[in-house]
Image (cartoon, rainbow, N blue to C red; front, side, top):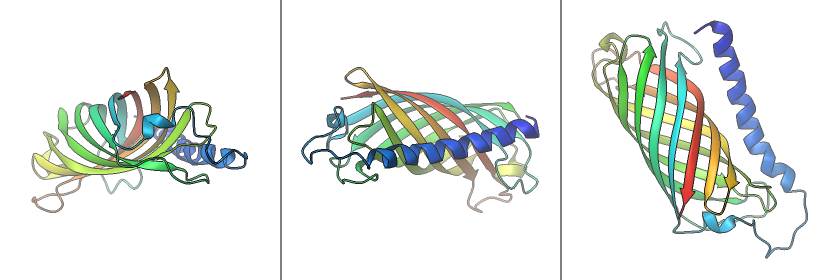
Length: 213
């Protein structure tokens, strides 16, 4: 992937992060009755579930390369989330926490390797404005483990750990459905448990579809 394209990915990620945080901030200036909730706020009430499927592409290296080689790969995942609490707050931070388990599978299409597969446990904060016109931004962070056949000179061994972070926005469609666009960062390494631990840092866009129940 050319350097110019990588710079576009980095800039797009920064724009998405800023827009996801700015959307509810604009809504905070609107006066509304304390008892009037978001028309779809019930989707984020305590005890509800969210099942989602997502797909995208991550590009590595992202940020300082430390002589890391190019490893670009697809990112496909199935996820089940659980709302830990009801929506709370009155400012731009109004929202709730959600925990989610994710199974992921990736095909490496550029670089020394063929696949990445594993799982991640996520903690997500949903920013639910009172009048968001169907848009619900979110930020999240997660950790897990993966198996991969990436060159052992880079990741050291097949078993590795992964740390992830993301920011994006959902658009609610229908009564129980949403589509989402997210910018995600993923770090994969063996935490110095192998002979080599150069690791990879990938980032890129992720599209998703969710069903709330």
